[in-house]
Image 1: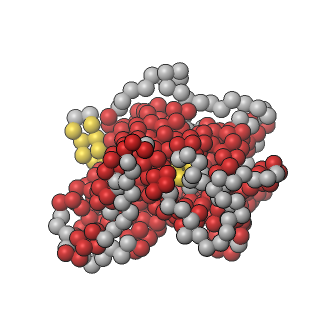
Image 2: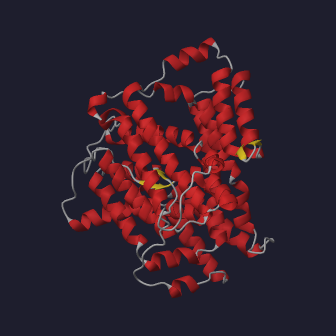
Image 3: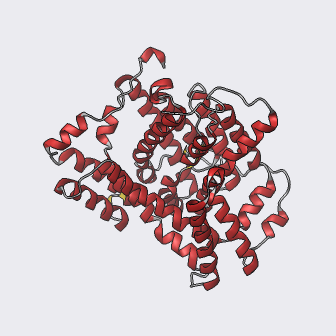
Length: 438
């Protein structure tokens, strides 16, 4: 729990508008790079993603009764399934998948209200989640490398590689040596530096920026207005299982938030509310035409450094993100960012995702010398990265989705040792809410 008195506590408002603006801008800078990278990789609209992240954050704050200072940005966990679904059936089916993923959160929230969270921890222990997170990162590795070194024609491009490596190196240096507030924006700093190198190399096309207008309405893709949504079960099978991973990430992020602000958010306002807020934000983001959102660790970092925990500051950041989505020059600039710049950043980010999966195993003290654990890990990694598929008629379960389900089944079926059983019985938390206090 927190050891220092906060500058602004959770429900305290900044006294001066300028202070409020500057504090909120810090959170915008922290989330910006990752939030716009996801739509760039998946082919979704960056302005819509910014609006969706802002709206999603406001929804989350409201659902959690303004007791949980959290920012929600584009989720990396859904990149692989969104790309796969979009290429096969179209982006509309991917958006519907995001909506359903949010609804799954709503169902989980309802169950948690009556039963607590123990069943979820049993269903998704570290031995399952760790390798699945590794699959998410490693599956994206070929995309990152291709962006970093290959031109539009798919052939090796030395200039692209130089720009990508420069972007990567600067970001790594920023992560390693920057202190204070600067330590929260290494991605943004790396992108800007790589962009300048790309300009010097003559590979930046400024056409989109020249054609941009000051104010614009983002290109929302709304169901029943822009397309007729349908339940494509094959597409849902690729996207919805990812919620198993993001649910555990949600719990982890809330634990971190609780330690920072000195209050147990999983008890007050309750995990059922944090999960519901996250789920509603995901659904609304997809309805708008953006990628599903998730709670951002980057913004937890900002709070830890500044000791400003105010939900008003996070809400201000959300309003700024929405405003940026309606500024044509912002989208115009983002579109000018060359592929190798994003490739250099992606090499790092996708590697970090995979490393976080490994960290999950290490921090949970998972013994890979144990044959049971080794078997589960091996199956998840090879099935997930190898692209294995289970096809029944027109229905196909493959890649990460298949690996996740197999991991869950193996964990439930394979017998545990007495040490593992004892360790599981000691696990917490078990937050549970009274049904009449929802």
